[in-house]
Amino acid sequence: MSTTGMSADASTEVPTGTIDMKLEVITVPVTDVERAKAFYQNLGWRLDADVDGGSFRIVQFTPPHSNASIAMGKGEGLLFGNKEMAPGSQQRVEMVVSDIEAARDDLVSRGVEVGEIFHLDGGHVPGPDPQRRSYNSYALWSDPDGNSYLLQEVTDRLPGRLWDS
Image (cartoon, rainbow, N blue to C red):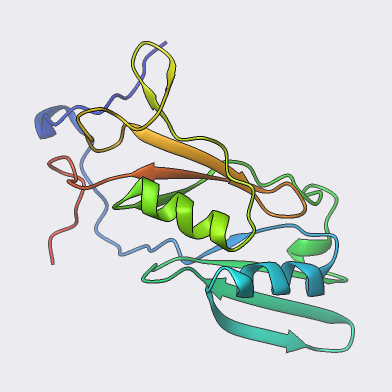
């Protein structure tokens, strides 16, 4: 079994594709669209769409300064209504932040239950990484349905982790 670590050595990486593909929207399955809409609005996320087509409804939000959004909804024939994605089944969507303590405090001030900050050092250790190294401090939180998010502090990207313009 092989694993892909956080190597900065670009020579071991698989060549990248030539067709631009951007992650735009992640489906977040919810039981109550109105409750979820109120929750994500309270976070200060931008409401991009609220489409009520009678037999279906789609609501889409984008976190501040993110290039990817979340979408939720209900209705026949929509991905949101299939049995493969039960409400609360979207787990560990990573949300990158530049200051994990400020991000956690902001969520808590908005009424979100956020787990304590932890870092990795041979296991989960309480508190942010003492050296504040990128990719090493985390905190978990969930929406009212149990879809979970993992805050991750990133202040400097590793080489090879940014696309050339």
